[in-house]
Length: 212
Image (cartoon, rainbow, N blue to C red):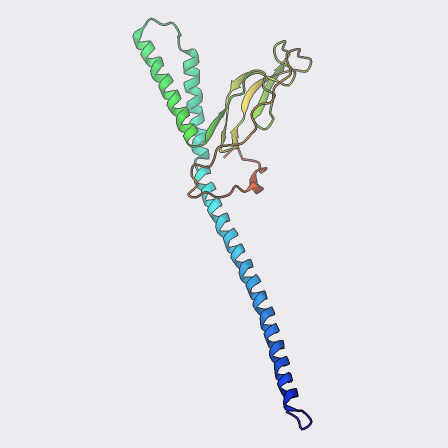
């Protein structure tokens, strides 16, 4: 306190300094809280991203294995298509029933693990994201751009295409009913997810390597 200061002035100076210090501490505290919240949000995002990537790795690890099994499923389908429908031989009938049961069991295993068959019905609109046109031909039963026949079914794993369905498409000028839109693309929930993680749409538009 200087000689020309009264005790009241000194108290006011101390109070002002204390107020300034408190305001500075309040500002610093607010900034630290925001920083802590930001770090917490970043840590949570990192945790979710790592968990999602781990879930995807568990799910798509079977992609190559699933693709290798598609050949077996195709062979079973061909065997059933070539099997005699009216054979009187009990051995042949038993063999055909066994092949049918094996084919159904394999499809059930596919579906359980998120491997979904793509087999559009006749008249469904051609979808370049799920179908591969092997040929075009005029039709009086299906409108232009519609699927006439499925030559080989396709498959998708949890919404990701691993093999397109090979189809015959109605050519321009076909006089059948207009092609109907098929079911929207999209796969089932990830059965390998350890926890319920919110779906990240950032990868939805990514192309899938069907040669893996």
